Image 1 (tube, one colour):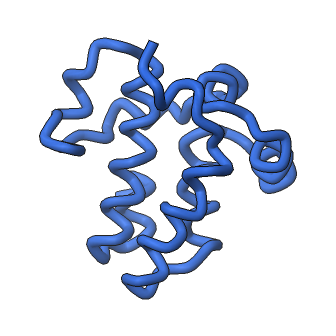
Image 2 (cartoon, one colour):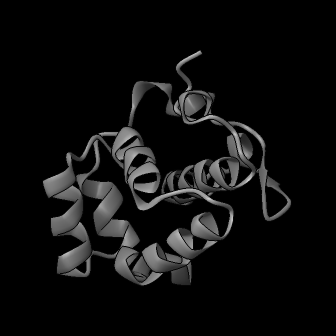
Image 3 (cartoon, helix red, strand yellow):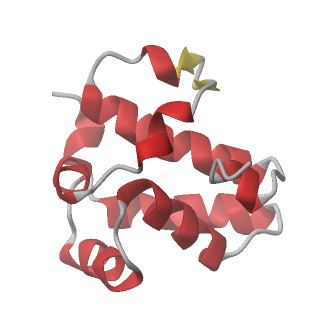
Length: 114
């Protein structure tokens, strides 16, 4: 089992947020990306973060967006569409979405709306 599977999402969330805020993005945009990917509403997302849910638990409870498979590209030198472990792929989907926001892509494009 990879170490990240047992890390709490709440411990990584501030790192995502700091990365985005340095690039002029907002907490609201981060939350929109997370809720789009996971199917959580705002209240569910807050509960997951407050409960200390691990990435394993977080994605076990998630209802992955039907367009998640459209997330392609590389994260840490690995193509997300080629990751064989389903949980690791979901984590890397989230990483990729955060990277795209940080790179300045419009939110609608990050959310695969067009």
